[in-house]
Each structure stands twice: as C-alpha cells, then as structure tokens.
Image (cartoon, rainbow, N blue to C red; front, side, top):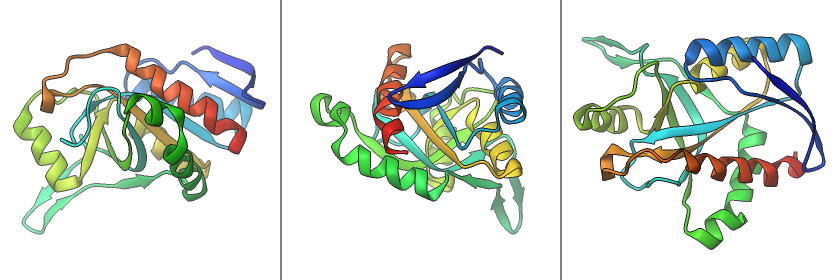
Length: 193
C-alpha cells in the first residue's frame, strides 16, 4: 500500500492508494492510522449511482454509510449498521458544495446522502431500487463502509466523498474520469479544514 506524504493546497497530507475492495481499503486505513495518526480521514473515489436524481459525474457527500452485504432481514424488519461522516467535516463540505466551481461551471450536482458499500457491484435495477427506497442509498462503492467502521473504532473523524462513475438507473456507462471531480473538490476543501 503506497503512501505519499507532502503538502497539498496548503495542508500537510498523507495520500494512500487503497486499491479496490473492502479488505484493501480496511488494510490501508489501519496502516494509515497506526503509522501516521491522522487528524482526520477523507475517503474519496468513485461509485455507481442509485439515486435517480444523480447522473455520472455528480458527487455524494456521504453523511451516512453502511455495508449492504451486512443486511439483516427478519419479521421485525430490515436492519443494518450505519456509520456517519464527522459532522464538522460534513458541514464544511456542504458549505463548500454550495459555491464550488465544479458544480457552478459544469452543472455537477453535489448531494448529501447515503453511500452503500459491498464487495460486489449491484447490476440489477430491481435491487438498486430496493436499496434506494429501503435504505436511501444514493450510490454504492466497494470501500467506504470498511473505512467508516475503522474510523469509528479508532475515533478518527471521517469525511466520505464519492463521484458517480456510472449509473445503471440512467444507463450511463463507467467513466473513471469522474474521479477527478472528487479530487478537485478535496483540493478546494483542504484549506478550509
């Protein structure tokens, strides 16, 4: 797991490439916490879309995060464990989203919502609709829930941020260049932290 240490947008940062999947994201997060003791963690990357209001390139500020492979169904209903981005980090990101040039110039929407994570891509519209209507998921990725669970365990403030790389809801195919939207947003956010 490579870590890059330096300054970015006036802040000292440690950037980690976690690679794909919950195990990789979890391992990289534990290494970052144990070696660098970060003040906060900003988990950013791409995701697939669930919310019909969002399109490829739009961004989600992950107020709520859950592992959608850890759902419990019973006669009492459907349950899962939810994690949350840090309130101060989320509020700062929300304020920035109102004026950020990506949204203002290119029509990119930035929505506060729920991110689902799992080690599999949901490629069925009926299940995507179920996740969105039942748990209010705006999008899905394969990393955020592992990072959120570890940040919660170690009491490290977390901000989750995802850009839609694709959305089956609108038949918009995968485009990894959508990741740049998150990167530009993080660069604008860092001086505010």
